[in-house]
Image (cartoon, rainbow, N blue to C red; front, side, top):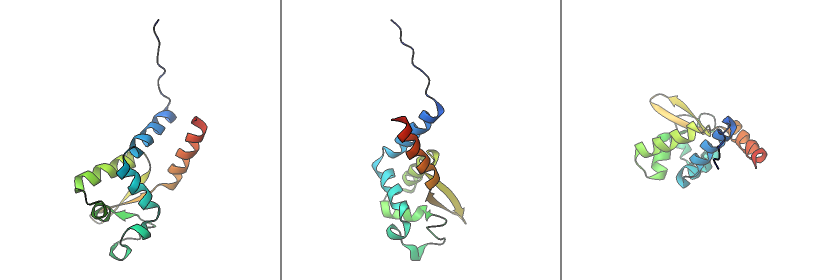
Length: 113
C-alpha cells in the first residue's frame, strides 16, 4: 500500500518556520528580552529608542557573549520567521519584536491544534 503525503499548506509552513526559530533556547531568550528592552538592555547607551526602534545588535551580542556572526544568524532566523523586524540606524541594525505577527502566530496555533 502506498501512502501519499499532503503538501503542507502555507499557514502550516509559516507555523513550522516559527517553531524552528523558537526551537533554539538562545533565540527564544532573546525574543523574551526584546519584550521589555528597557529592562534587559542598557538604555543609556542606546543610539535609538529601544522601545520604538529596537535594540542594537551590538547590545544583544554583548549580553549573549557570542560572536557577531552567531548573533546575526540567530536574529536573521527570528526575522525570517516574522518574529522580529530589523531597522538600520546609521551603520547599526536594531531589532524589535513584531507584536502583530506574534499575535497572528498565537491565533493560528490556536486554530491548528
